Length: 108
Image 1 (cartoon, rainbow, N blue to C red):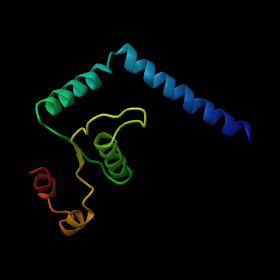
Image 2: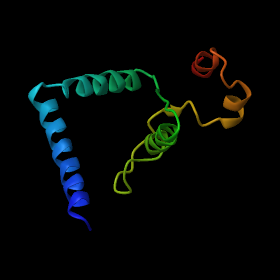
Image 3: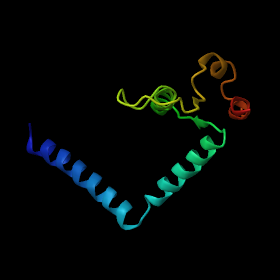
């Protein structure tokens, strides 16, 4: 492996560490904690988690919804957490592709 490739890989790790340190230093992580509280409160009061994404992120949304529905690990046996990926119905999505109301109709 060339020295240039090794340096790029190393720099990628250093950039990642730096970005995470900045999140800690600026206390930006508190936004995620607050979002978690909003989601937990909603679910505790009968709500559900609606997930979405585009491209590969749509697949991530489907996977995460399945994890909430089933369980996060095989060691945890808990009740289902109501979660739904808005992209999991490909027939509906492709029938209304590029129409501005698609998101509203999926949520309603």
